[in-house]
Length: 446
Image (cartoon, rainbow, N blue to C red):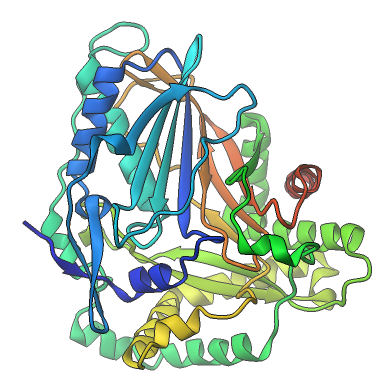
């Protein structure tokens, strides 16, 4: 047995940042055509949980140390009910890792379709690990029910995993020699730390009801989604290629412009200041391909303000150059190094997460084309798992206190899909829709 395992610094950071009114919970919602077979889905869920030890563990504290320890994973963690007619999520709350595992699931049944909702504690896994879990569930379900959405029998196999790799999930492929070689490059990262400390990011929206922040909204979580069709998605990719940048560069540039536009219309009296985006950075190496679900991720922060937003071309070039500098010098490790340093201090990570302010204006995560290699058949790019066809997918990261919006972009069925998880205490549904629509219109602009 691989457990117990100590929490990595990023795990502990997410644990310390968890609070009842702002849970460190990520969500995934999978919408299928076809009725989910309860027996097959329950078996597939149990198989998938068994492949990912950190998702069935609880946390035990001993002095200053936190460990993942084995725990029973009760069958009640997967609940069944009729789907709510308004498309909302099942009523939920945060996950208390000291008394329960960091995973819940709901199977929602409709007359002609099904929905699977998954809730993960971010101390247990990152966004790519959520997708890894989804892939394992879909393959396990196809194996349990047999056949695809057309009734034809297709072979499916789960990819091999090695739980022993969890012991080195915070090594990031670094040997002592590689770490020594990176030290001089990390000096650039220290300059970024100085800028981070000196610049105070503005909030997306002022909080209109401070008392409401003390409790989780009754409709938590709240999400709006949009998609660029396949033709528009190809146009976006072609435009990025002509400009010598990546689609990710375009996403970040256009979100800066969208947020600036949104704030100018909805918060005209707000003082100008730094817009700061928190951007998750995957730190996996090829050696981690067989690692079960875990946090192998860091954060980088991108700041821009008034004058830098005036020229779309220069803004895009600046973002591209900054991201390339970060990748070349592996500056994603700078945030991890800061977490290590804080953890060495008494209650260091707990102090780091205190306060009502936010580290960033909002978050944006690009998960790419994550299900493109899943060993299942598809129809028009949509994955067929047994008798189910995955029609739509929403991914939602946590919201820190003070952060009103978190965006996730990914590709599915040839389309660019964007989910916006928003804080209903700061944004109305109409404002959230306006924010996301403003972002989509920026992406459509030449």
